[in-house]
Image (cartoon, rainbow, N blue to C red; front, side):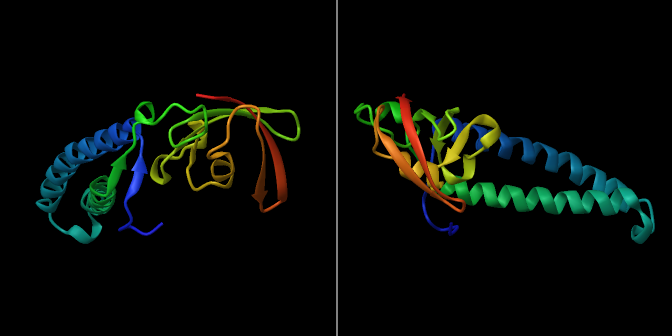
Length: 157
């Protein structure tokens, strides 16, 4: 996804990213102090504290810059303010059954906040695209690299 395209984000995702940015800013302050102290210890070419913390400072700056740009272009979508049609939309939590009769519960979120460990899938994911606009009781086909998969929607909240 191009960096300059406005991106959808849930209120929870916005809060997580703002919290991460705050934590990075606090860590940056500490790391700058260590770099300054380490720079005063002589030869920087063999100074592990200096080398490691300069590298960490670059990582912090890169991540902070990325987060800042993404937050600047974020469009917060509050699922509770969307019309309650019973259909899958951004921010919906969907329970579906796959071809192997396994139940899956996923929440459709923005590109940047997708995290399968939390059951959150990107709005651009094949499963999310197939589910959008459907309701409980509907069946959908999902194009995957392994072929077409069939899913039955059990619940939409």
